[in-house]
Length: 115
Image (cartoon, rainbow, N blue to C red; front, side, top):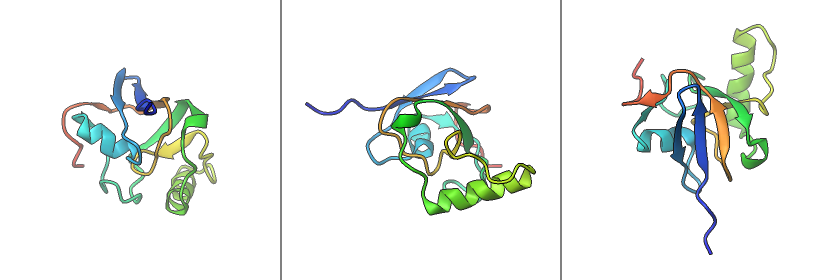
């Protein structure tokens, strides 16, 4: 029996979408026809896709070195030092193994934000 396909639910919009094995959250959102704020389209440079991990911490893969670097820069820009990657993740790098809930204002049905 195949493992169930994980679902990502996004607050406050209430949208939910499946994420295929090995696919990142950002790519899955685009495939589902959602607009997810971005500038770099998955390059882990702009950090515009950063989302708060609300639930399902045990269902996410560990951050890569690339993501850790970007999150460190994100925290520095906001004067908070290195951000806790257990609570903030980049959708363009985040891979899930089970259901999760993220908080990301601006996610809605439509196409990706080009600005």
